[in-house]
Image 1 (cartoon, helix red, strand yellow):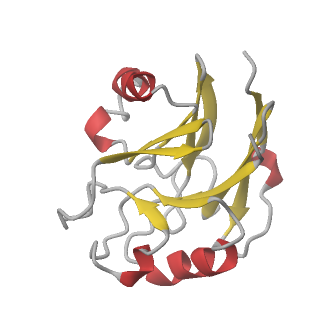
Image 2 (cartoon, one colour):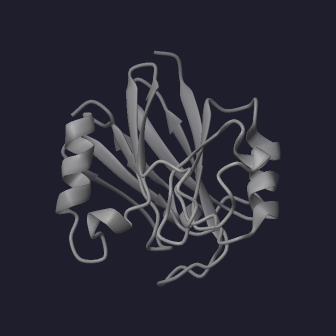
Length: 175
């Protein structure tokens, strides 16, 4: 597999400008751009051209899918917002979704908290919120994920595209 790079954002809550800024910076430079829901924009908005987007609990437009499975070479990416999987209380349903998809990476949002962790073969990644961070990390963030044959490296970036290195994580793909 050739190296892959993806960008992941979530929970922009009406801020079209930040979506456009991230898209403009990375489109054509990365293999895929994902938005994990709660954009509050119409699904017909031209901003979504070239972005894989799912519906969040604050997206009232039924034109969005609830979940997506994306194949990037031999990498399987499962994507959902998370609210339908009860992630405020348990990881079981999200984990089952990832297992059913045979996902290498499972992207989710909803909690507005950046996180990267592994369960089994799957790396679960929440990019945080680009508008309304919650929890201990108060920075508005998105994630850049670099995938090689051996590693999955997760880095978080601020809205100014500065590396927020304290959250960087690297996972071995060969388990």
